[in-house]
Length: 223
Image (tube, rainbow, N blue to C red; front, side, top):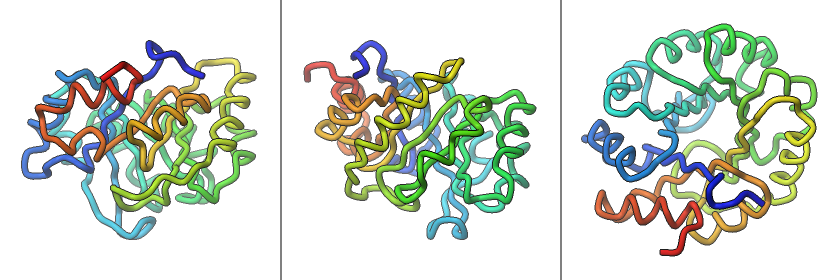
């Protein structure tokens, strides 16, 4: 179980006001966010369309916190350079989103960025075994990707299995969980070994006045 001081919070701007994204990013930065989680969806790999690299570039001046960019797009390789140039610090891809995801991870590293790999609920942990030397972050999806506000899928055994794999990896790897994370489920995923929590609705639901309180609660501080 990760201690409160080890927990990083990555608010997902998918739940922010899209008419004022710059202001939202600045506000969650000031409120204590550790990463800014940016969900990129293409209407092909997932049944929704969000934003592209030009929006990431426009948001970059609004925060110095790491941009944690989750690419739910296919084919993903065509856009890696664009998102790297736009200001992504971590680029997370799905193994199903390209023919050779080992090569995709190599490309992300060659661009000077941290490389993440996302596991959908139906994607087995075993897919990580031959790529962990290239991975800086493993994202366990506790919903099927595509929309915010979905119900949490209790994949605690999967989270623990990823934590066990990270324990025998010879470099630091973040274990991130995304999907239905709120104050109640955050306790459970922290106990299972996650150290980065992505939350959209749970951070943004009350507007800017609630950001700091909500981030502290997700981290495990008393409210």
